[in-house]
Every structure is written in structure tokens, then in C-alpha cells.
Image 1 (cartoon, one colour):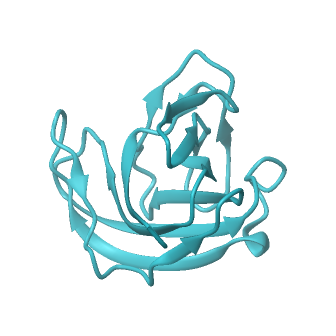
Image 2 (cartoon, rainbow, N blue to C red):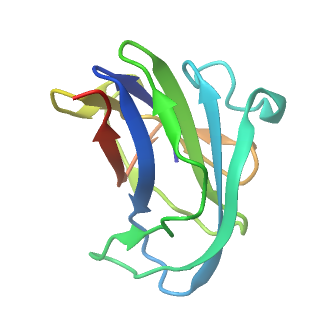
Image 3 (cartoon, one colour):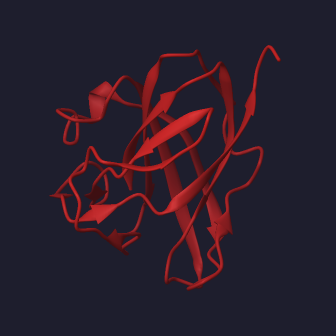
Length: 144
């Protein structure tokens, strides 16, 4: 899953949860880059690997919360744009089908906007425009 996050306030990204059909142990990697992902879907050198860990996937209908200590928390200032790519190291899929453009907003509130994004095969290979972000981001608002 590869998606762009727009910050409406100063935020600190604390954690993610993912939705997957798998119910076994998987190795997960999280990549981050400032700005949008578009144009960088197949350019691993533009991204920073911020986490790699094992997680017990909980399967359909149960969000898999990633370990809280998996990565150093990332601060995003108001008005900044950041991209995250969360992937399994295996070739197993982690995606949800979509029928909207990748740059459509799929979730937003007064703090953050998350774009639909795209699906990716492991380590910056194929890009799937018909797949979208399916997870949640845990964050805190800074300077309140």
C-alpha cells in the first residue's frame, strides 16, 4: 500500500494498522518519503526504510495493529505532504480493490487527509492503480 498524507496541523505519526486477508506471521516494511509518492513508485532510492519487523496478521475483518515501537515517530508540520509505503516482504498481497483515481481523498478530518494511493508488489515493483490504502494511521496533534 502506497499513499500520500496531507497534514492540516502539526502532527506526529505514531503508528499504523493494516487490513489484510492473511492470518499468519508476515515481515512488514515501512518506507517514508517527504512529498508525494507519484513519480517515485519504482524508485527505492527516493524512500527511507523506517521499519522492518514481524507481525501476526489478524485476517479479514480485524485490523492488524503494527508494533508501537516499530519505527521512530515522524513529525509532519502543517501543510506538509508525506508518503508512506507499507509492504509485506513476501509476494503475498496486502490490498483492497478501488475504483477511484489514486489521488482521490479517501479519508480526512480536521487534522489530516489521506489519499487513496496505489497497490505495489514487493519492493517497488509493479504498481496497481486499481488498489487503495486500507488501514489506519495513529497520530497526535502537536502544539495544542
